[in-house]
Amino acid sequence: MGLLDKASGTSSKPEAKPKAKAKPKAKAVAKAVPKVEEVEPQVEETIAKPAKQKKPKKEKKARAPRPSGLPDGFEICNKLDRTMSWFVNFAWNFGVLLAAIFMMAGDTSVITTILLIVSFVMIILNVVVLPFKTGRNLGQFVARIKFINTSGEKASPFQGMLSNSVGILALFGLLFVTVSTSKFGDKDAGAGPIIWTTIGAIFLILYIVNWQFAKASQYNQGLYDVIFGAYLVKHVPEKGEKSSGFWAKFESMGDYGDKFAAKREARRVAKEQQAEEAANETETETSDEEKNKPKEKAKPKEKAKPKATKK
Image 1 (cartoon, one colour):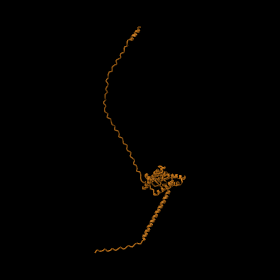
Image 2 (spheres, rainbow, N blue to C red):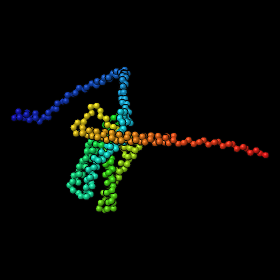
Image 3 (cartoon, one colour):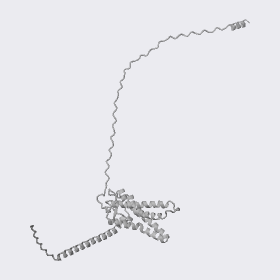
Image 4 (cartoon, one colour):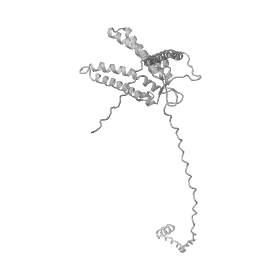
């Protein structure tokens, strides 16, 4: 029991708490003041930048003045050539068409329909296809004339097409006006007659304006000739310029035109010679009559009357 009492006695005594060790006080160390180094003012060296070199301005190329007027080496076609070309084109463009129209007035059949189709094909061939392909129409092939520009080259095909279509459009315009004006006041027709009459009037006005331009121009240039700067001149084939195949047949048509022009020129010369001979004969007759006339005797001079003396 003694051991138990000792044990209980020891356990009943409060345990002494261990004393906390005193922490050593840290000595205050004076902070080192950083030395301010004197910085010498650095002078910034300004590096001179090289000046930007200005790019030289591109000099505008001096445009060569556009040639104007009739180029050298070409001759304006005469009135005979123009007349011949006009007649050939008129016969080609309207011959079949007029025949079909007269036949339609009597009876409309399959033949008239075929003729109308053929006539429109012929017009398109002469007004559109030939100018775009060769620069000339059928009448110009026969008369040996062509359109050129101020540089002496082939004129624009649009100019040829427009110049060749002036007469055709004027004819259609006349038909539109005559047919449409008769339907004015018809309520069932609506605005159709007014529209077609306006279109026809425009075509007729263009024809009149073109004619006035040609009349006032020194070189007989129409409206579209002036716009495109084109001249209708005599066609002289250049060296090495040869047509072959189908187009050569059009070139050979110029032979017929040359023969016709030669006959016309021969007739003109013959008429001039006859006129000169007739004038010479009349002069000789008048001179012979004057020689055969008897000379009239000179009348004696009248004697001067004596002046009356005053008394």
